[in-house]
Length: 268
Image (cartoon, rainbow, N blue to C red; front, side, top):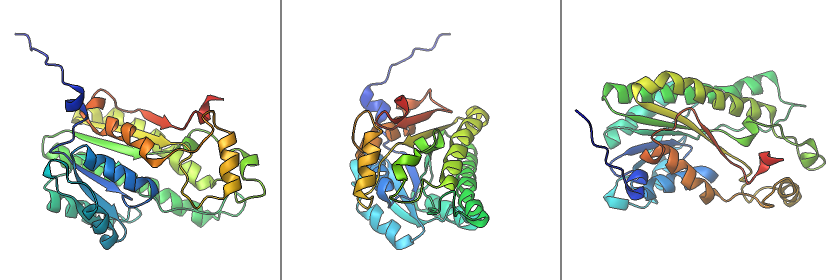
């Protein structure tokens, strides 16, 4: 007996209606655009932040496509108890979680000249938090006999070193602990994808290039632009398409991938 394949339309492939997406760090510079992208694709969005009130305010501001409901929960990805309590709160509020975006990050400001052992170690806890959240999502969807999608947020700086001359005389170099974290996230994506595929859970990574906030020094901004074939910084909204590709059925045959959106940074 043969099974007839009915090819979905583009609209169907990118539609997240009926899905619940949990995003950590959903109130930040990139997280806000990510949260809006998920909502605009029709998902019920659970915005997570260390600050529950801030998370709820961000959720309330999201568009309600197809009458989707949005929620705010508190999650600190550096604390395992907070991870499990926050995930349980998300499930209680929304009924389930189908998509996880690991975006939250406790920043580190010191570079390789003055980063202490303790600060470096502390930053790698973010990597452990991404793993614990991904495993929790995997267990949750397996218990439901459902499918899941995990999207790690990596970085071009998990793949290449920063140029010393870009930062020289302006500020500290791009933090070495951050590079180690993002490189680890990209490799963890591949590893989890290989093991979770049999569980119907896809694991992919979205790695932004230079998407600085308005707080970045103007001279540094200019130097970064000089390193880019496109000659300009990225805008947060330019990550929306790649995120929804990985979250939706449009990326149903993608797992273990690292999609880099960097304006051509790694091209030369």
